[in-house]
Amino acid sequence: MKKSVSLLPAMALSVAFLAACSDDSSSGNNPAASNPGISSDSTNPQQTSSDANQITSSDGTLIASSSSEDVFQPIDPAAITLDEDGFADIKDVYRSLQANEKAVFVIRHAERDMFVTRQGDLSEDGEIQALDVGKKLVGPDEFTYSHTDYVRTYKTCLGIATGRGQATFPNDTNDIYTEGWYVSNDSLFDEYSKKPSDTHTVTSSWAYNGEFADAFFDYTAKNEEMTNMLVGDYATASRVRVVCSHDNFVVPLTVYLTNKTVNLRVFENNKKWLNFLAGAAIITNDAGARRTYAVKGLESGVQ
Image 1 (cartoon, rainbow, N blue to C red):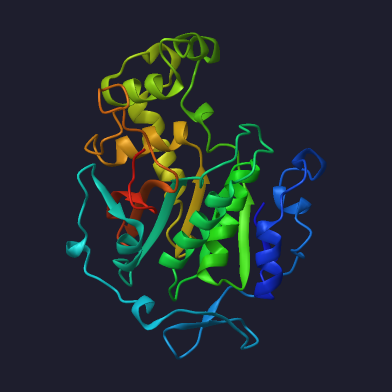
Image 2: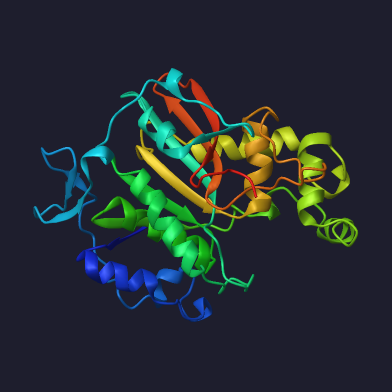
């Protein structure tokens, strides 16, 4: 179920974002319920003022103002460049969005703290990372958000919305965006992931080379099914949606969408793995044509 919670006033949102979430087992299926600084509200998503570098709420309240160098400037898709590992900057991909196109960004959460459970939060650096990526995505479009039932994915989406200066936070929780989408045999996956291997090596080796295939569903079929689910129906889809997930889900999808050209081959000597706030972008136009990219929110798409 999609929830839209008010992000006004901006100061209250900042306090809410920096406060730690409580155990989400007490809040049902949405970590937002444990965040005391946000009230449930159905205010309209952000509206842009006539001044391109100001974003206002539906009542005219200024909630974000960027410097002149950050004013939204569209670019031609042909101007998008890839780094040595095959990643485009998420800011460039967003700004290349044409009038008849809609976008889905599927990214890994920001840097987390030491806890890997559902209650594991973002680190202080992770909170800043999410805000900074949101600032890259300031623009005239409505963004909606999807995340898993983990505090760190919820908080990443919230941080991006905060950085964008959104008036509301339209979001939903869905645990389909986890490695379980790809893993068909948990026991085999766990067995293959024991030392000297690990889950990253197993997932990457499968995505690129088809190794450990008996622990997974069919690579092409599951990626194509997920891609179609993410894109959805063009007529009803939001202009831009951010889906925040986890590395072992985002990696196979990104490898698939880039036709294996992105470098996430952690099994090779370079040991490159997906960085925080990196993943894939799927852009679809009203005729059904798609263009896809590996995207990075930070300086590098790999770690």
